[in-house]
Figure 1: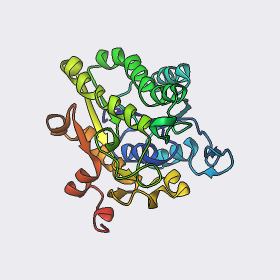
Figure 2: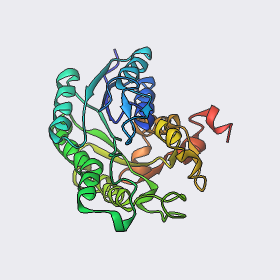
Figure 3: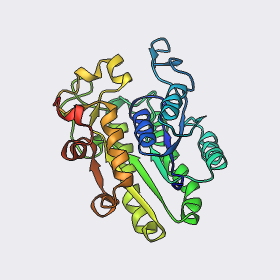
Amino acid sequence: MKPRKVAFVTGASRGIGRACAISLAEAGYDVAVAARTMVDGSARLDDGVTAVSGGLDTTLQEIQQRGQQGYAIEMDLLDRGSVLAAADAIYDHFGQINVLVNNAIYQGLGAMLPFKELEDRYLSLLFEGNLFAHIALTRHLLPAFIAQGGATVINMISATAFTDPPGKIGAGGWGVGYAMTKAAFERVAPLLMVEHGEEGIVAYNIDPGHVVTERQKIKQKDKEYTAFPSAPPEVIGAAVAWIVDDPEARSQYGGKICNAQREVKKRSLLTEWSENL
């Protein structure tokens, strides 16, 4: 019997998180998924009216269809108690977590504001959702990770952390607050490796590039960011499934930034996508 492998993916109701959960299930992982949206189609955009497809219920079905066990739990990045409670519930259910994918992001008020409009209240929301919640979750799980002999931590960052936008917001640019949170988040993985690499903790930064998600399509952002290469979420899922199980990945990308689209293309991890470029 093969030893159990368990992954925990945050923000897995749709988009990159959903794709990562499915790819990890295909790679033989039981997968726990967390997000705010439990039921497909129940989420709305900021206008409170426009529906967005995706929910943990359908992600769970995809995991189970691949012959793996799944577990879904509601989690809100702005509710620290729900974040830590989700981690505890998953450990109670599976008894271990071998891979943590910190993918969820805050997508509410302030995410796409110019500097002059970025009030402290918006910054607080952005940093709580995109940085502090992930730090708290990883710190909460760290003792269990070390006790079990190690774990892999995947932090989903963004090229906005180190790239200048080609234009203002609405012309290919992005909010300065969002970029600030991703720049800070990028620093977590290398420091985790320095402090806990000898205890079996392996941490990676994944730069997904521009990904055409459900929200991107509804907001027509897929047509705005034409200055950057684009990919469907499945490409990022393939990159994550590769990096967590490739024995050479630690020496190449441990504590560093892995460009997901480039690695998938170079390694032909998703042939149907590469052939259509």
